[in-house]
Image 1 (tube, rainbow, N blue to C red):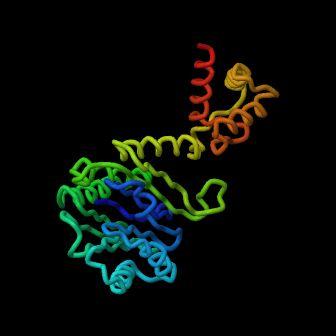
Image 2: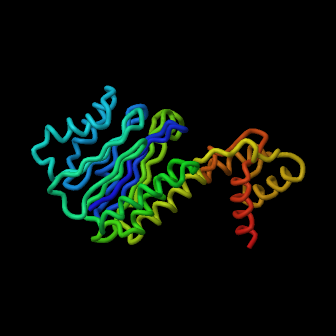
Image 3: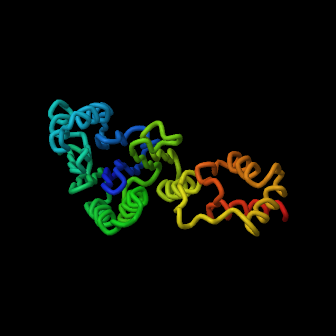
Length: 279
């Protein structure tokens, strides 16, 4: 009833899972992960204990193949289960029980594990693997969603669509830098869940992305005057820097603020709001 990709990105030190299903709130069931340890997707007749138990094994340094062997070996219902694991070193492993509903299967390799059940056919998993391999230079979270989209375009869950989710773990990458959950987006019930997940990822990047240093604009001269006028038109006063801080905090752009500089993404949003206000 589900297809997923579990993966590791060496460049950013991230582990992530993207998943879709004809199932309510699949993100509440399938994806589990921990920065520095690995990630686990548990599905089919999902055994939710595979998540925390698998992460405990991964945290102890157990490799992906052995984690799958230990989880399934202790489970009398293993032939109804499906699980994908990527460990701390990026090794992938996937298991599909013989009693999972057709079509069911998976692929695993360096840095990924892909699996699905009740699919349109093996082309779903193959398309996901191809999409993953074909975009090595893209941001990790975009590669995960691209793989999910490719599986959906190849037929996906043959019962239809309902939910999708994306979770990414990276050390200290959560909002505020305290926890490790970098991205946690869920579409629990939607006619086009993967498209909606992509839209949410766009918003996540808008609000929580960090500007490229070379793109930053000096907040001075004509630009400072324009920004000050726009902020004043929106009701923010007290000097450009203070007004910008107040506006950005209200609009949730504070992660993109750099003292004395301006992110072009923030400038575009400010201009749009000021134009809407003027009209």
